[in-house]
Length: 232
Image (cartoon, rainbow, N blue to C red; front, top):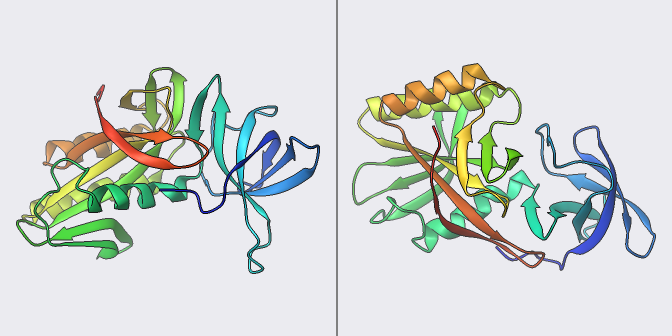
């Protein structure tokens, strides 16, 4: 996934009201950027950090910049969780996601439960495959990335929804997208959200498949990388 507009570097001043961040461009200009990340952003919103912003000139948007990347010691973190599905969609179309070959149709955002939409539904060529994508960039000790970074009732509900699809004879998968370049192994942050961890364990025991994949990240593009191990 190429960025539509070349990213420009800046220094983070603060992130606030969940979706706003103040920053200073390298030329000294103070700007406010949109933050497409509803999570806690633990460890990735530290004032003084080097970040990368995507400018835009869309008159329908209130802000002229979007915060896309964090850079630290030569590594990158994609903080924009809205990009995860676009990255995975490109990977699916290119045949880069293991276990998904042979399906005729890839449909995004399909309603499949009372209050849920699955990120991707793959049909044709075998049992239907329901895929939920989770963006994982919370790290306490590299090279281990953890999910979630805060309590997520929605995430726990999704695990139950996937398990019910398996019970109905379909396949279901949760794909954790590791959106930072300094981590190579994924685990569940059980101490942060025990309820999510329990839902994860139950869904996995019922046959929900679990896959972790990393990304290649630069100020020019973010692309799906390779399968990474799980530490569960």
